Length: 311
Image (cartoon, rainbow, N blue to C red; front, side, top):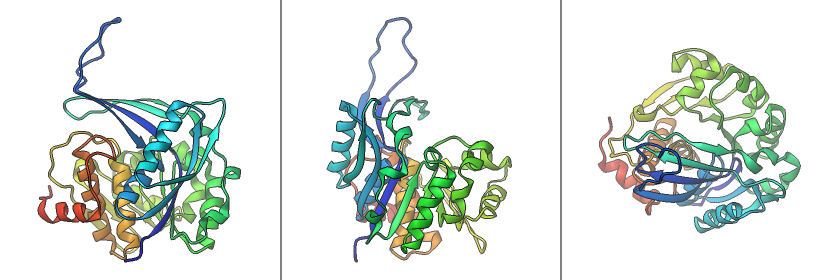
């Protein structure tokens, strides 16, 4: 099968995972932890990594700082087969990074620095880079604003690409209004359940998804944590369960779902099968640390999905 060509654009982050956190030591005391690991992340960067592992040709676009974090992030992305030629270096600002302490029960609070992600502008992007590309995934439209994000997605659609969007910010009605102009140009919106409820002010995930469809989105496919995913269009509502696994770290699971779902879509699967693939990829990632944990590809994920039980 021909390899899909995908462009990811937006948020790129270097995650530092610290596993085995019971509490923050008091004063200047120290404590031993189980593991400290790095991984490329972000709604563009993390998704790019997983798409590449699943067999797509991926070029990613965004901003990093002129610092060691940026050089490390670019190197990690490149090691995963991602074309990083679209990343621009911004001086005077650090590369975005997060420190994620993972508690034994799987909770993962985070410290985050926005850094260079806030400095990326559409003028940093050459629209001709979309020539020959099948799909554009925009991760973090709130950093561009709805008007600019809408311009980008409309241009992509005009060139024959399908489009998707994932949002980094927590659900808030103000954020929804800020990105509203991008929604009519979005084929697939891939948020999480908490974001949808926050955006729309309803406890019903289905009603919230339908409210976003009314804003012009073609399909809304929110993740639901341990409950799997929901796929909503004007014609159908599909519930897909999660897989039974031993969770190590859920960081990057949303990006993994997006990558799996989009891989399924671009391979011609129907929406239910694409969502099942997304859940399988997310489950695979949750069993390790970050999106690059272990060795996996599409064949491995499909084998896992065929043998694993769902909730």
